[in-house]
Length: 361
Image (cartoon, rainbow, N blue to C red; front, side, top):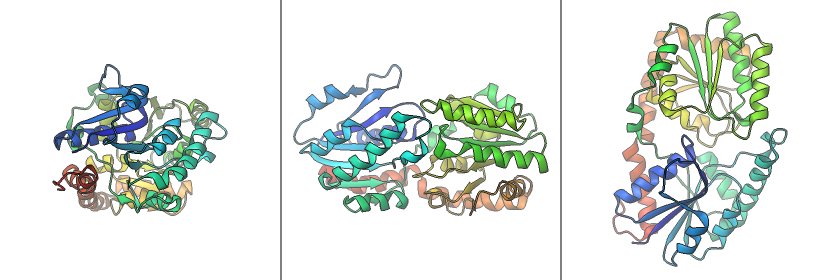
């Protein structure tokens, strides 16, 4: 069986693309496949397992299989397209450049370049995998081989770890916690979350608290806009914006929240939806991108973003125990689609033959 190299632009803690790469590496190892990870930027502190890009380029053999996690523009994408090896792409979606133009020129060009590079590499790829039908439509438009739609591989066992005790105590004070987890980014539309929360506080629960957890690296100007908006609304004491947090803190956020609120306008999958399901946390979301596909019947989808209407639904989801129980049962059903062993089997059904393995299941 051939060796496998996984390439991605940046590998870091808490990032959905990085987590998927690491989970796939564990799958390859479990199946007895020699495999390596290489990234241009390695933010896994103390880790020697990620091979520097230039070194990896020198060590690739002609019979090695090359797998690229595609989520942004990078010179690596053009290099990958030119390789004569058998190649596969795992497409996580590239956020359209329009969301970044007024905040970060680097992210803007990365998004523009990534989509151009994706279209150019399409004919050189043997296998395409993506995490949603929403993403698959983009790959087909670019001319990739018919994509296999397989959810992100999430080790559910990771979520049984102990939450941060300090955060857990802080947030278990009887107040209603509304949560969003995701990087501070214009496509995530945190300003719309704040607008809905403001209506909820005014009309239903004056002591409620909003948690906007996620890194603002590269989008600091956007974060400043959100902070200013929160201050303008007089909500500074009720909105927590902790920045990049530990996994244990994220677990504490999930465990103490009453509703997960999403107003994003572009999501290729949305891992926090599945994470919310793991904690029996109802999800209220605006219907954009792949959110509805990922969520299924495990939450409530809004056809628009009217803050007053959304706040009314939010109140119902917080206070109506019968509705919460119904959604809890739906979440359990939806979770079966993302169960770790099931997704591993789906991946291996596709990756096994690509690697030349006779064991396809």
